[in-house]
Image 1 (cartoon, one colour):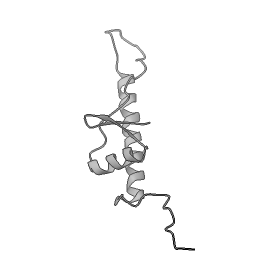
Image 2 (cartoon, rainbow, N blue to C red; image 1 turned 45 degrees about the vertical axis):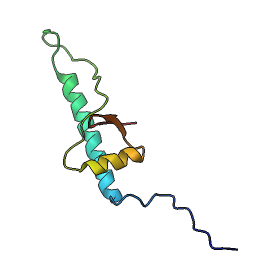
Image 3 (tube, rainbow, N blue to C red; image 1 turned 180 degrees about the vertical axis):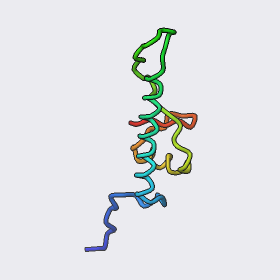
Length: 91
């Protein structure tokens, strides 16, 4: 039986460590949550004492403490969705 290479379940094409990808995804989720909360907490329509409205934010620019390559890799893995124009969203 000839030696056949065993398939690698995780592609080795990424040179970005998995722990950095996890930290970046956590930072992205936190930024998205805070952005939504900020929008929902704003008073709207000139009405005093309103409770705000449900946020319609779907995509944000990711935190800049991680390079673009990290966000592109997360999108390639399907953990984020590239919304275009530098914006990303959760799938």
